Length: 325
Image (cartoon, rainbow, N blue to C red):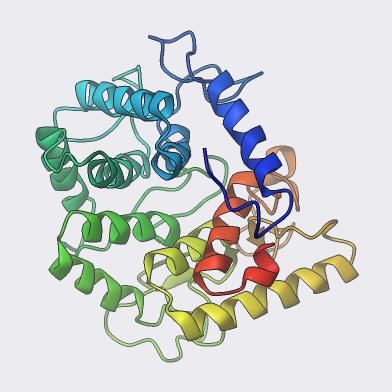
């Protein structure tokens, strides 16, 4: 495993710790598949394993690559007849997530490139791509979803979610579907309909007229301008947010995080996954939030290491090595 220790002191130590966690979790109690966490969640979650596959793809470690191959092959065996990937790698009946199939396609696309196997799991890929085509209720590439079906299983993200559609844009480019990717790019760069309805005309997208980032979600006459750190980080990494918009977005993030710290809503230097937090009295508030997602916790503004990792990668992609370090 090689990392750029000469650039950032401490990177080698952090990379070694991450590698040790992955190796500890490599063989879990379910069909020998990796466990999601070392001391909890022994199940092989489809959402988590493709995300962590980036470690195997970046390091090309033989054990991690072999494990990733097994995960992808098991998912292909347990794929639904219509092409949907289950939420648990080993359980073909645990269905209903909006991000498992696009995450499978992203991981498979990168694995094919790294392993030099352009036709690996071709039938499963074809079925997954068709499934995702039908996830667009308008038949215009952009994908819509039901609430609580992506990684935020306790937070409502209905309609055209930013996070899932950045994954769609990524796999379309990986699989050479450039025309569809261009259609999605154009649609996502249309203005979302806000409360005032200003600047939005025709088919709405995910751009916000008065914010330097993409909406958390949008659908017809509704949208949310809460900031989704994961979705916007992926927008930078995928190329949906080019250099100048990315720089403006990062400046806004750091400024807002400073304000949250000043107000006592944020401790430490890492950004929360969602802000502003949902609070009692907000238009999108639901009573269940207080029990499982109080402001600043879990999906309602918690600080997630894996999301901060994507933000750090986005900072590097945007040339902000100072902040990334």
